[in-house]
Length: 559
Ligand SMILES: [Zn+2]
Image (cartoon, rainbow, N blue to C red):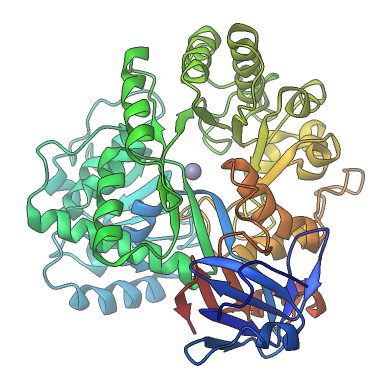
């Protein structure tokens, strides 16, 4: 065993565990000792118990795995926190069940200006499409809306449509639609953010969407009361992360306001997770607005709260044909999608961000988007010189053969989400697999292909798009099956999956020398699981629960 600070009592020790350090030089142990927020020793139970003093807190892992805290490399903390208070409709099927869920929920929120449901299946009423009339039958007198799991479609009752001023429809940007009924009025189905934004904003939570919708700041600035309510939303999201063993968050939407709220929580009681908040650059902005990204980075640069990143959306999603493809969609052969930036605009942006020394993370789902973004990173390297930039591509749901090796060549990180492949967890096979087409299946959600080509692959949930639970993500990664027998196996082993949620997550934020492993001198960020993960059958992994989460040496969750 190795000890730093020997001779001093530990603040906390974890004993009787199956410690998986994720450190190849010292892969397993029985116990861990922590002092001043840092790991001071890893070793046998006896050696660690020598560091126990009268005030040392002792955590008995009871034979469960002890692993580095999960690093969630792509999520949306503020909106996720808000959604936790909404009605959860996942798994609800049939009119009766929907009616019961909504009618049970409504009285529990007597003062809500808008009742909101989340996670409702597109086929909740079987083959019948949901309309405002169904929802009026269930709840006629209060405004109600509910969102599909992918957050791209919502349905609202008449009361909500009237209050939002969209019962008679409205002209919207491409890709957004208020579906109209035969009676010339809105049918209740609202496609994409511009369509459902006016309804959702009535919930009094419009500020949680700013970091995604515009990247801008609240205007007018919120009152003290609103700010306190927003801090509580953040607290709820942070507690949800800690409960799932997460100790570091790489958020994928952002503005200064989110950093301010988190800094206020840190000052009041400390943060239960470390958080990185990017600046979100939208296609209507000009390059001088990157000054704000630099300001965010200078102002927040601690190990608890940081920025240093610019988040960009290059395309949309496959299911609405808004992802950008190299070749046309299999089920829409005259269409390759429409990018949110022209390739040249993106190159200019990448060069400008890279010149500031900031990291770039770009939502790129189609293979055409992935290519354009890699072209931008290559141009930045040519213009500014090669440096350790660790720019990222988010999602990469489809990629072409020729772009696979460019990740390793350019030092670009592949940020992938194990819950996302259709059929892997909650998302159905259709319509996505038909949209992609069998010719592209071998290089769809191609974690293995990218890793084998030398790319750094980080895993995440994209919460609240998918459930936040990293253990569910690990199970999905380990159990991943090809869609056709001829397709390559893209699954990850347990150890590779854990690596993608710990070691690679640390690498993605330039912190591999401080976190992602259990090692003396590293941050005391760890999680104790309810059982030994290495002895758990893949199909049973979901039964494992975090029992104790420790971040910076503090217990942030205890079952
Ligand atoms: Zn996302």
